Image (cartoon, rainbow, N blue to C red; front, top):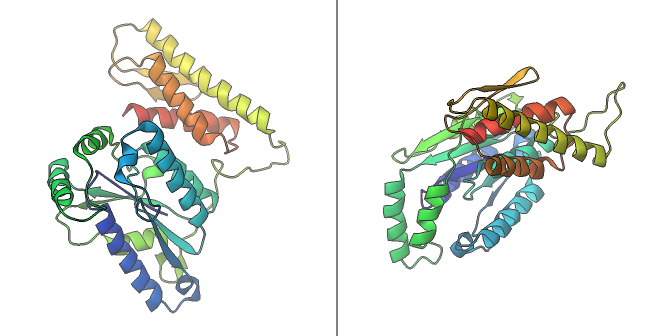
Length: 296
């Protein structure tokens, strides 16, 4: 799974076309049947029949993301290279795609199209002035999407490996991306399932029922939120700090974190992991990691 991310009108589709052409040529030239059987699928707003206006309202944008998510999930497989050529500007959504990729034991990466917002605005104006029906975003939607963009962070699991493509570069680092997704000649890429996506039944531990898992997911995340609130109550006026949770620590931002923000992050995490039966220890560490990323 190759996740394309960038500002609106940054050239995401142009870069995804370059990648698709490169991957197609590599597959056609391959003598290894494990590579020659691969196919490339590109999914974006145009292939899904979505207009730019879906980003004007929260409800229609949510439906558009659901359509993209479903299309990617259907296309994912060990013999298919899926290029997700969408906005993908929300880190929580990229996390969901990462989990789906891991669930089918196929590698994933993020391509950040690093076009500066000023240049994107210039390109967007040119596209709006052209006769291309798919070109550009209305000014208000463009400004809102730029404001809300959450840049990929290669330090997080779901945004790595991360490849940034500057605007002036003629081509993305196609060979490096190929190696990360497919592997080098004679040694194909292998992905092991992990606890975030696969239930692992152990002899000494029976799999949790769905109700037990949801209870643990709710209880563990709420305990962490309560720990943060208690720490802030005891350290009024202090900036930053560390909250100890078990044998781990949460790095707090310099400004206090309000309860509504913590509950919003918690709801997002629960929603994304409702279908994934994490072990109790993984719920805690995964939520701490998600919190840390959300604070940055």
